[in-house]
Image 1 (cartoon, rainbow, N blue to C red):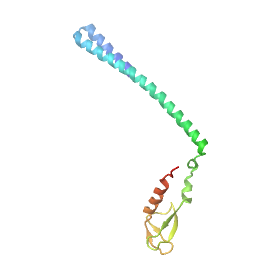
Image 2: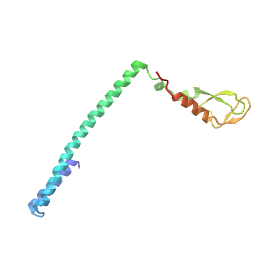
Image 3: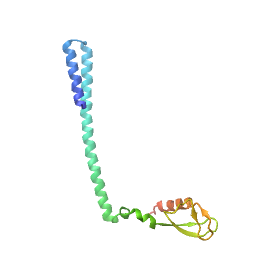
Image 4: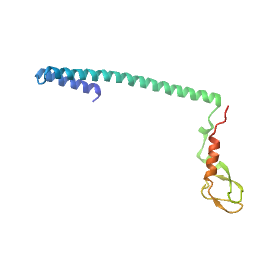
Length: 142
């Protein structure tokens, strides 16, 4: 049962009460005023729903147009072509805290248990990877 059906039901109940003389006139007028207010609110709510739907459609259209424009200006987004197997090919340079040896690791290596190829020291390189990530996230000023 939608809101309009519920309002109609309230109006029918008010009519029955008026016909039966069960309530005094002031109470039936109050109930009628409340039903009028509910109808007005329902009408406003319908308008808002329509406007929301229209605005949502416009936003979707603008988003699509902006995406097309970005593709024209910047070319296709290489991230959209990313394949999960590409993770294995990404390398990061880390430094052994004991001997200072630089080595490259891939994302399939546990960053909490990196073993230095020179001295055999096992170390945690999470802080180094976070620093690399922080540097990568900074956008250069144009």
